[in-house]
Each structure stands twice: as structure tokens, then as C-alpha cells.
Length: 141
Image (cartoon, rainbow, N blue to C red; front, top):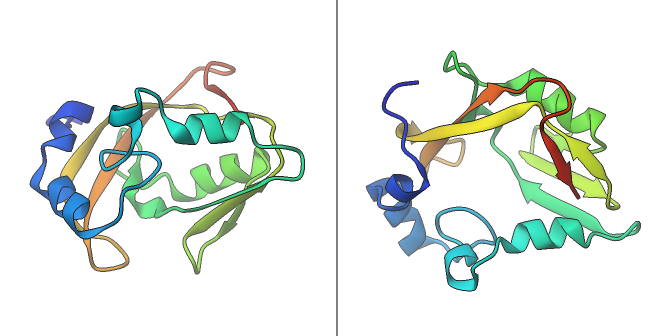
């Protein structure tokens, strides 16, 4: 996983700059309100998701990679489903109804902005994750 970009280097990347200029701002990521607000609005949203609330987000599983550089794909889909998320592979979309504690056994290691186009044909960034030991990746949603 040599040559991965940290968040600061990633935000200066030409790929991310192009995305930032051509798309509306997002809740999370390099083109988000996080820097301006001083907190991640997506984290706050997940923390306040009520029992009847629903979260829906686009997710390109091929851009999420393990330490070996291969997509986490089925392993990540399984973790999402074990944590109550639904995944629509055709639409590249995850959803979750109701707030809950979720556990994902991965730690973010960095990103590669040389991934090439994603499923939409737009330049993409691949994120790399390493496995965590059991019970060390809890995220409150």
C-alpha cells in the first residue's frame, strides 16, 4: 500500500479538485462541509438517526480495497448486511433504517487518486483499509 495519500494530500489531488468543481458539495469527504463546519455532518446525522429514520447513500464497492489492493466487495457487503444495512448492487446504493451501533472490522489506511474511472465513467479515488482486531471498529449510528 505504498504511495497512498492521506486526507490532506487527497484533498489537493487533481481528481478530487475536478470532482469538487463539477459536483455539488457532499456531507462527507474531501468536497464536504466538514472543514468549514469543524465537524463531520454525516457522523452527526448517523448519531441522530431515529428508530424510524432512513439513511440512503451511493457506494461503489470496487473503490474500497483491502491491504492486498483487491476490492473488499463481498466481505464488505457481508459486514454491511450483518450491521443492518441493505445493499442494492445494481444501483450501487446502501440503506439503513433506524439508529443502531455498528461494527466494521476495518481501519482506513489512505487513498489512491490514480484509480481511473468508476462505474459512472468519472475519475475515481480508491480507499484502502486494513483489518482490525475483533471489537475495535465500533461506529455509533
